[in-house]
Amino acid sequence: MAEYVRRRWEPRFEGMTRRDRQGCNYDAYLPDPLAGWNLTLPSDLAADIADAETAIRDLNQARTSHVSLEGLARFLLRAESVASSKIEGLDAGPRRLVEAEAAIAQGGESADRVAVEVLGNIAAMESAIELATQDQTISLPDLLEIHRVLMDRSSRPELGGVVREQQNWIGGSSHNPCSAVFVPPPAEQVKGLLDDVVDYTNNDEHSPLVQAAIAHAQFETIHPFADGNGRTGRALIHVTLRQRGLSSTFVPPISLVLATWSDDYIAGLTAFRHLHPADSPERSLAAHTWLRTFAGATLRACSDAQAYASRIDKLTDQWRSNLGTIRKGSALDLLIEVLPGVPLMTVESAARLISRSEVAAGGAINRLLDAEILVQRNVGKQRYRIFEAPAVLELFTSLERTLASPTGDTATDPPVRPVPRR
Image 1 (cartoon, rainbow, N blue to C red):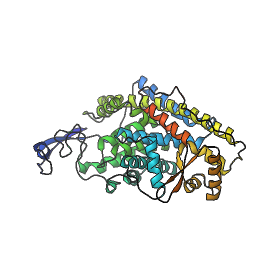
Image 2: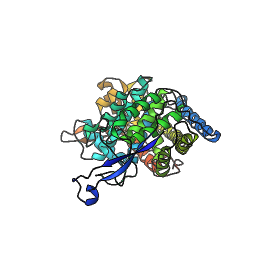
Image 3: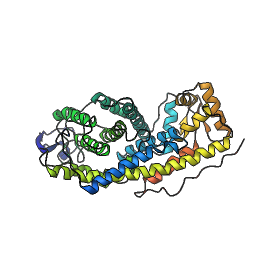
Image 4: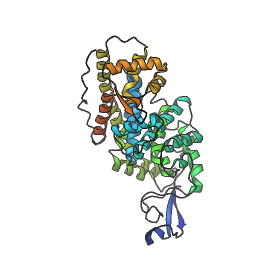
């Protein structure tokens, strides 16, 4: 049975105020394991979940109608990563991200620490999806590696991939849990609970969407790391959906929706923390609020993704029209495919993206420069050549407007710059 465990916080002297230095009794929440949970769902919620799973399948089966499959996949993955960071208060717009990427691309550093951390989250999400694509199961070391990649560009990289050995908490003072909003399980319980989450994600007791939602809620409840829990937990959603075969190609940007539904998001995770017997109907009832929110967010995310797929189609169609004849399978053809998800590149990174030589990638980039699809920027003291896609940046700016709207501002296409023939 889930319960609150009473613990004692001894007074300490690091804080500046008496409130920070005080001791207190606090209650840490100890959830039930997930293994063997006979979760029951009312018919209307089961129908909503089925609709959301169908929406993900429809999005992923759209490969026959979308011109730029890899570009769309990269765009949606980047959108999901940026939105997941925004939920944690790490808000950096497309231009700031590109500036930081430009510095990092040539082995330098960026002074914009927020943008660098968001880029770290993009790298972690890419790592998570790659793991899920390669393996049918996920292990605890895999999960720790995702967290390590996430934290690698943070101000505390030493925390990456390390399960906490101390009590943490959410809200209140940064010095003690006396006024915390929520206190996760005691440190000695974390390893066993994490193993249970990993085992749960590797089975098929529940439907894929339910499994992803429950795994995320339990992970957030455990809060196993000193930092980066939310972003790692949202990456776990997509690991689960990919492993269960639901999102084989495209990541539905669920975090994009949860970022605007923050009150419902928090309320759902809070309601998930029940205090009833593990096999009781009340435990299932406690999960229903969260599952309703998650199903609704997934439906909205798939709708947004379909809207952006149409925009990307129009954009790539215009590029191809203005470039004229393009040989199928050429470096130029492949680069156009990935470009909607890559607002900035170098010759070297372009070559890696399309698995072609740097000479071939450079030739394709020159064609895109001539058509003003790419523009060149010189960065750093060495004036390194970086290539930027303005129309892709405009697409991400439009995404930010969508992100700022609880209902989703997807009715109007972003402006597409006219491209002259040459």
